[in-house]
Image (cartoon, rainbow, N blue to C red; front, side, top):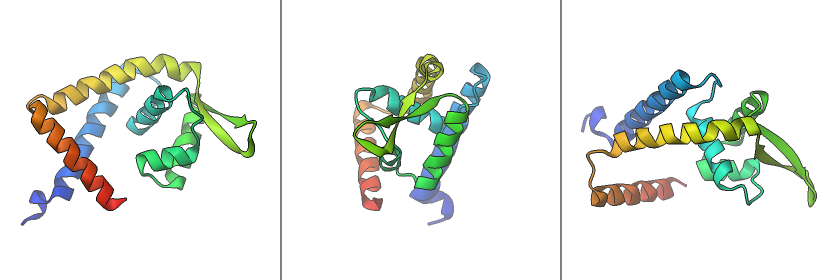
Length: 144
């Protein structure tokens, strides 16, 4: 099997194309210097406003290292997309909260990401999508 036929190569290639497409759309439509990963984190925070979300939660949810999450959150904080708030039950913890600026941008970016997902999946049947999603979940679980 040559390199281009491996699952790892194909996954990485598709991942790069998706990131590039999303970044191109964000760059075209927004002046906020938001990366695709920041957009995904913002979406997760937006979808979980009823919970206190901490850096460790993001590390686990997105399977990324602490140092990477720290850098992403520092940049998001610098760009006024999030704030970190103390919680009354543990002085060591700071929950991550979206700012008004981020909430306003969120809906637009989510719609744009959904358009990329539709484009990505346009030739897949529902059964193919469900099977592929299940396979990706299994692959992820094999590595976690």
